[in-house]
Length: 171
Image (cartoon, rainbow, N blue to C red; front, side, top):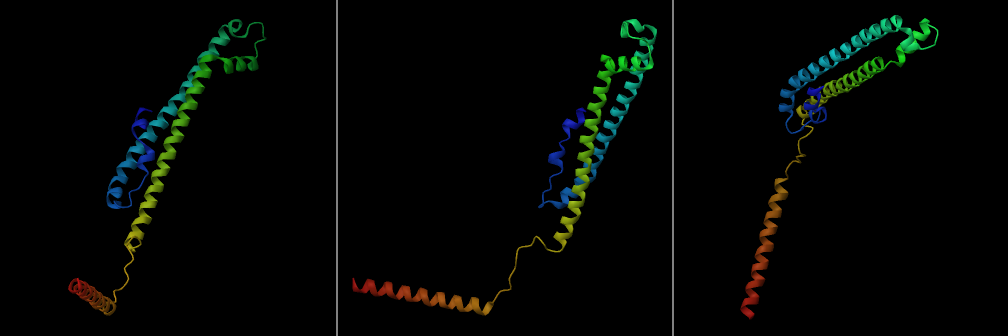
């Protein structure tokens, strides 16, 4: 799927904890885009299944019309026809195409599931944020202690200035 290549699921499932509001605003459109990709992948997978049926029916008729071409000297039985079908390049190619479409579908489905988990994570992060989980610790201030420290610092500063003046007088 070409769209899958332009939709980077890994980057879209990341959450910026500093922009939960923006993440929430984007979530619905991300899910819509991912769901569209999933629908397209399912359609491609269904078409590949239908193609296998059509190719198999066509080759089956050809084998029955011209068994010598496909079976050689082998006796024509349902089993030998089935074996010839299994070995046919067109049938094998159609099955490989279906396998590829199934893989793409499963990968996009995993991306949609991850976006659903992102939604759940966003819900929980918003709850934590509402409970001030991410707030910095804020210890109550002890104004009396801060005042005493300030006075003590002033005394120390005054003592240092006094010592400096004494040294200047002596020199």
